[in-house]
Amino acid sequence: MDVTKVVIPAAGLGTRFLPITKSVPKEMLPLLEKPAIQYIVEEALAGSLRNIFFITSRGKESLSDYFDASLQLDLLLHEQQQKSKLAVVQELESIRRQANFAYIRQHEPLGLGHAVLMAQPCIGKEYFGVMLPDDIIMGKDSGIGALIRIARQEKASVIAVQEVPASCISSYGIVGIKKQITPNLCQVSQVVEKPNPEDAPSNLAIVGRYILSSKIFASLEEVGSFAEGELQLTEGIAHMIRNGEKVFAYKIPGMRYDVGTPIGWLKAILGIAMQHPYYAKHMASILAELNTANSLLYNSSKAIEHSL
Ligand code: UTP
Image (cartoon, rainbow, N blue to C red; front, side, top):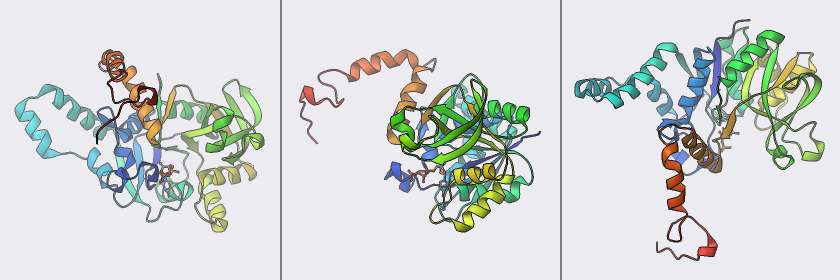
């Protein structure tokens, strides 16, 4: 089974990040010096997914600009021989050399399932990856690469999952277990979007990485013809399972950050900095400095009054 294509849906409105998302796509928000989307593309390339299809919408042009060559800047940095800055440009050049980027426009935000369906003409009959840029997965190996290995082994679709506490279950798509294959791999009996914890079939939450059979498109089309409101990807996957398609769930290793919310984004920046050879050195002193009686860190017990 050859998997070379990945769909990255990035056409959502990003309302949880308003007002900045009025003019800056949330995928372009920086996690240290790189935008979130670069982590996703690097994970895709590390998993040998070179044909990258972004689903975008109005106002997301900075995504395609970012991965494009910037001749003027490149020329200037080469002329000035600024080595550290040149290295950054060369990193992006290397990404450009390895990847084939294409951009598909979703004209209306009709849901993640609808966004994935937009890629149908580019995918054909192959298995393909889906990576949600809201989920940044930091691990030793490429998260999507691990899913590809399982998909090849089982010759079927695979969804990435992680265990979540009961209090978080209603924020996720949750899988039901049909058959436990290994401690980290199971065959899926059903997927339920955002269940109440007491109705949830497990505590295995879907995180934003998938390897899907192209049969998902027929399922999304069929479910979409009855859908009211947004078309969810989980509805398409549930339909595929009901039609007898095998779907597996794999407990993906690594640290996951949900950068689709401001709190998750903040946690990601701190977490990534703590694992970074340069920034880690500064983190302890930064946090200590912020947490003093005179700091701006909010703590009602300090009762500090701030002038505006
Ligand atoms: P979200 O549910 O997080 O929606 O989408 P959103 O619009 O991005 O963000 P909020 O909720 O308004 O803050 C999950 C993923 O699906 C994509 C998003 O870009 C994100 O990667 N998506 C969602 C689309 O591409 N199109 C859609 O119509 C909806």
